[in-house]
Image (cartoon, rainbow, N blue to C red; front, side, top):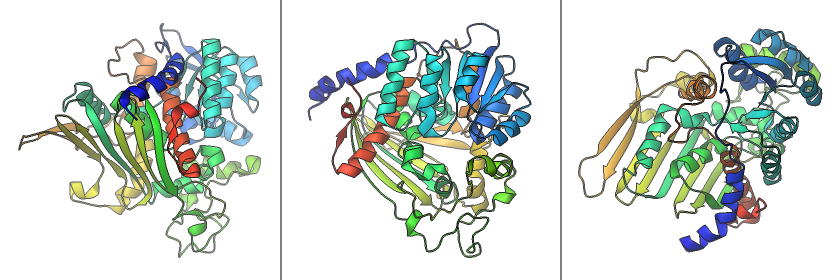
Length: 461
């Protein structure tokens, strides 16, 4: 379809989503502490959005309530965070009794919309972990509720805030190689990190929206932000060929499995202190098994995914996600009218080395929020102009902790410097959250119906 027709047919979609974009992220316009409640006390909620806020942003944040369906985990996390606020298993009761100004949502993905909408209707603003939600109807409900209530919703896309991804955005913003025409983006999850999704609740589409949503929403948001345009059509392919029913054997959990010595995916949860404290010691309350078998026959998400994404400015993206690679990282390339930008993260042979122990530790380090280390390595961005033999190498400091340094930069902006200039648009609201989710939803629909799916089929305009 000609670019003008795309622009015309997607203008209503773009306008609808834009109406849901948070206005100016008016978080902390004065020095007073804000009354905050947290719903969802799993690993992300208890660490980055829990103890980390208490320890490092205590002047800005006062926790007035914690909520979770698991009372044992609630009490465990309250003690871990070091707060004396009340705990609740009923969200409505918490909202009524504590009246928070802000609610942080870190529950299972498929329930994000429930708490985002209920918080807005109760008069609170919202900070939500990605993905904002898991399907088109839930997206629509969040957008409609925000428009009706006027509340703010911030979606925490920490990958935008890493120095590496910011440097790429700056080069694209400056049109260093001219207007971009196409992008190649390939993400590799290693056999340690990738397998973890198939042990957990993420292994079911009804919980996570699949990795098209739970994981790839990060990648789709980066693409939308980098390209600076609205996605309009998706064609996708996917299969479950490695995990799930494809396994040669299976057990109820790694702890009780008779195949421990022969399964390459055996994981000894008893060696993971945080998982034991949060999940194993509280299984009696909700029955959630954190070390489930990656070869369960009822797993229904894809482990091999590929998509083409068309944008309203004519840019075409080729994207893939692999969940059982020997190494973790990504490759990205932008083709422009005047040249090409190439970059990558954590490709071992680019560095001339491979360490299995490092691969095992990568995700744990990424999730660990610690004091910012002095980087000894760098990411490289290669800029090559057409008709030029030489290329420019842009070197960006490489941070291992807190999602490449993105967590701390995002939280500092959110809580310490909310009025700072944001010329590259790092902060994200419901428009960004919806667009990233809708690409994944369109991909699922494309696989099921074997056709290209337009995003304006998915939300009401």
